[in-house]
Amino acid sequence: MKDTRQWQVDPQQATTEAVAEAVVPAAAILRQGGLVAFPTETVYGVGANALDAQAVQAIFAAKGRPADNPLIVHIADWAALTPLITGLPPLAKRLAECFWPGPLTLILPASPLVPAEVTAGLPTVAVRWPAHPVAEALIRAAGVPVAAPSANRSGKPSPTDAVHVLEDLGGRIDGIVDGGPCAVGVESTVLDVTVDPPAILRPGGITADMLRPLLPGGRLQGEGVSEQERAGEPVGDPVGEAPRAPGMKYTHYAPSADVFLLPGPWEAQVALLRRTIAAPPAGGTLGLLISEETLRELGDLLVRPESAEGVLYRSGHLIVGIVGRRGQLTTVAKKLFRALRAFDHTDAAMIVAETYPAEGIGAALMNRLCKSAGGRVWPAGNPAYNVRR
Ligand code: TXA
Ligand code: MG
Image 1 (cartoon, rainbow, N blue to C red):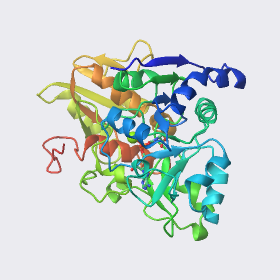
Image 2 (tube, rainbow, N blue to C red):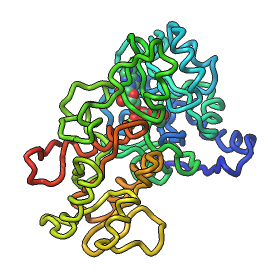
Image 3 (cartoon, rainbow, N blue to C red):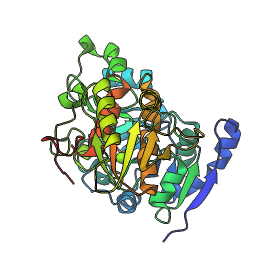
Image 4 (cartoon, rainbow, N blue to C red):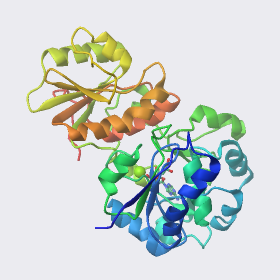
């Protein structure tokens, strides 16, 4: 067991100088080959010096991450990019200039300086400049590029708060810089610009609609969402489908309870929820993961929380998790992982989750929800029901 040190810094309150000072000890640990978790605008990452193969190996050990899943290298100035890659195509330069700092990861040709532990032996490297004052200050103070996956145990929902990192990696890493909750709540968009047209390997904070105006002819491959995800009919097998980003083939974002997705348009989902609440399934406590609009629709069936604090509450035998507003999917993205994690502190055996149109940030949402459900669709008697672990 390691002694995991913790530092607190509130980027809303602290001056730039105070943030820079707060990250000094954490930066020193990174420089010495240690592991430090830190906030970004998307989720918390757990970082190591990207040029130190041994330090990078320690990340895989701490997370229990398969070695064939490459890491994103985080930078906080343009000069740090050059040594990591063999060249910056004009399109990649334009995209970086437009979206960095921000939740866009670019897949670029890797220079020999980048250890194979980071790239999982691929000829490419994933790079991003996070838009978070603490992340930027930490990377700059460390003076090295920082390889950082999301700071969760492999397979679990990504952490959007320092306490989630502590739950998963406390005693396994050297320190956590607590900078409060993350704003976006889902990870960065991973865009491969080594192929033509560019391909979204993982949908995220920067949407296809935001990217398209910058691409020649507005052309984009894939968009990182399967047809089922797009149609809101998650009956496919996201676990078995050909992986886009190497990491996408593994079980992901899964709480302890089995997650099931509600199929079809919203009205049908609400109707199915009504039937489910009226006749809950046997086999353990049922959790619902729904939007505020759906809670309102079901107001006659569900007890409303007395206070809006916390993401979960009990209504009779049910545990209800509220994730933002359907009408504004960024609010759902922000709370999704937090709510999935909160269910781990309850006795919920099944979580029935509302689904959303896979448009804009909804693409990232549906991608994460489908992975979290591993292809399971509600109700369990449905012929589309499959158990995948
Ligand atoms: O928002 C984020 O991206 C967060 C924060 C911490 O920056 N990081 C994150 O890292 O989500 P991670 O390791 O959980 O996800 C990285 C994804 C994986 O799906 C991985 O397979 C993919 O990026 N990836 C990394 N390097 C790649 C490469 N060279 N080619 C293709 N995919 C790559
Ligand atoms: Mg991850």
